[in-house]
View 1 (cartoon, one colour):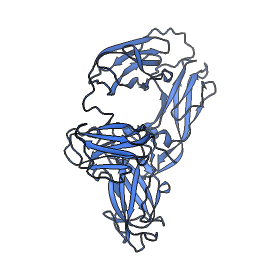
View 2: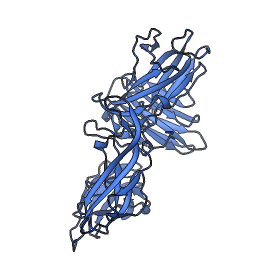
View 3: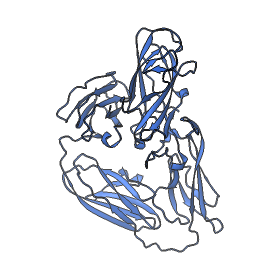
View 4: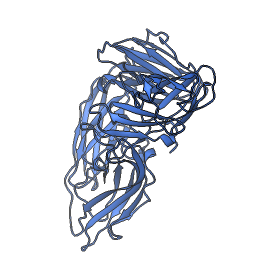
Length: 483
């Protein structure tokens, strides 16, 4: 499945194969001839296409096959013509997701399994050899490998998008489709929409509900009906996804389903006088131009409906798309989250108002002190100290714009690699330092038109300054991690 880079999206992995040396006739690894130097750099921490940012630490096992579909063996990272060397290359935090290989010129395929870095036993993503091929002839090549999140049905769900203990007939609501990969610890990352096929929603019985639209890869809107004889709403979501082949580190693309079931209150005369419950977590360290996280919980005995945040009586966030402000996300357990970027210093009165399906409202207020923009203010935080050794973000930079990236190493004093990669080609410059005032050239550069590496970059607080010198927007991938 082809993918185009997007600013959020997780996962785009690039292996850059940079060939050098005299051209030779393509052949199989068994042939004699000069070896071609292949620089393999995993951009963004070698992230598999299709995994979202909450996938946690990963490592990748890569199997290389020749044009005859035979596994290529390596002695270290050099082609082993005897075939007795290792047949699996590992890219991980320890080697900064970077290897330099020596191979005969020829056509190769790359099959990759992404495993979790905590136990090494959970398959999180898979890149089939058939989607990832490259011809290496000594004249340089760039290969973008495609990877797909591996769907885990046991961790996935089709459920209410907001907290809904009771479902009454004639109630219109949203079901949220949440396909997940297998959990690592207590975290199970979301499978992106690009790694599942179109979704079809069907009812258990025609009398269960009315589908108000065809639905999408993220859910469906419907109105509950039900009858005295059939008071249970059943909905099935059918789609294609990548699922693991039992007992292997491979996956195949094929059909699967997720089901939803809920009793409908069809014979009730109810007056809803119960107010929703609301908790608004304390906000701290707010500063002008900096993004502050707003969060809390909201629940109701029947169904939550709308939630909005106001800053000094001005609407700044909402779960209603037509409000055209920052989105508030909620889940079926009642947790809500959004962000707030204050524009002035001083005291700000923040108010959160939540309503249920009957119109009952609850309000929570707090006063937040907003400081001036700090000297080392930043646009993007790479928090690899709390993400298992590396972190990365894809950011769309407007034409002729600048971007400040801060790296949180949490006092880590070992080796560190930091870079910025322009996914759209030339037109980017970058510097690095211990503050916005202390900026210097990167220690080492690869492919200046698109990548800036900083091996042995500063420890402690790190600030990277990126400039887009194009007259059009570019997609930049910022990365930092230990090695």
